[in-house]
Image (cartoon, rainbow, N blue to C red; front, side, top):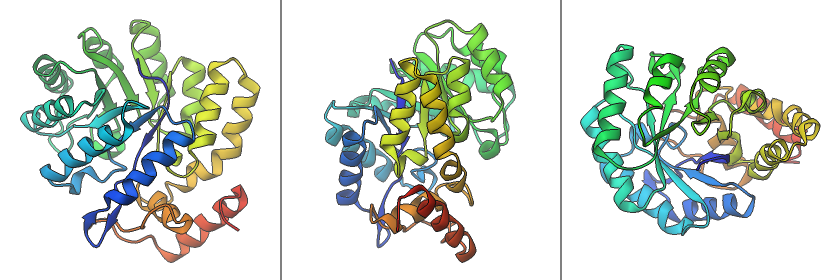
Length: 291
């Protein structure tokens, strides 16, 4: 259902508003370079500072412009279960192919609380749903046994794993059904997660090197493991560089340098520290992205 390279696409802003002209260019850039899935309104898309109206409009716009050429998985998660249901229902109505649901942040629910949260969303909205586990952002870790339990629900089809624990990935792949999808949520661990049975990545670095990320995943899928491993190491420094500061600060800064879109962010995110911009530019130059 969902596999390959997916991009956690940024939300470009200009003068405080969503820059839809730039977003359309980013969508075309991704499609041209082999990305299979567009993931708007996630962490990288600064969903926390999008209004409800903006959230809806960005999802609708991405679905419309993708026009079935690639799939769209909309970020619809929240720490408010009813709000997540509303966002997920809207994603379905807008024509999204699936929803990405982050674990509830700040509330710090128990494993049972997270199970009931995701179950209620899945029971209410008939749309393929992918769980998103990123403890470094949310303060809670969706444990493998809870993921496996949730995987038995018909329309919970996968998990984006960003716990940085290959042990957790191993447990999920080993014990979930074969058709349950594990996607890397950490660029630098995509190759190892593929080796464990992962099906792809929801990538941050693909905002700037979509072709390379897509090629690496496809090489692995086709059994060209040595090639995929080599590409992993070629991209590794850049994968780490887009996390020199809180995501999406570095990747938006890089996109501004490359002229892909404005580097404008919304508070409380702030411009990248000058010393880190210098480090980022060096990595980009070493990779060949800039002169």
